[in-house]
Image 1 (cartoon, rainbow, N blue to C red):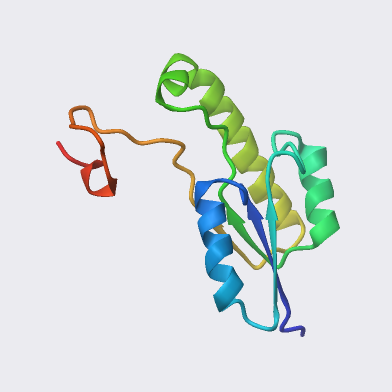
Image 2 (image 1 turned 90 degrees about the vertical axis):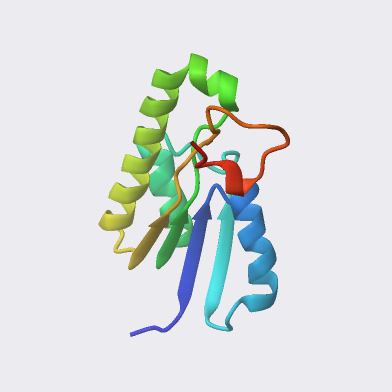
Length: 130
């Protein structure tokens, strides 16, 4: 059994993916290959493109960060579109991960979070304020 890891990071060009990429530069282990992909590489709403992406890289592990994003007001005015597309992305990533024998999937799927009442600028300590 191989001890080699191929970690596929969907949404790898976004905010969280870019932060992980910076950590990986100094913390990566010799047996790990990290692949950071963004929406230009594959449309994860499309099952065939998702399968092709996974076939290309053959991940053993997936960090799933990909989502349709657009900011607070666009999200509020197109919430059904966001829900449907993000459900499709998640379903495709999880289905293909299972089908291809991925050992572990870690998902982080919030597209945006803002408190109802706050002062600006906001920081992460204010997200869950009542």
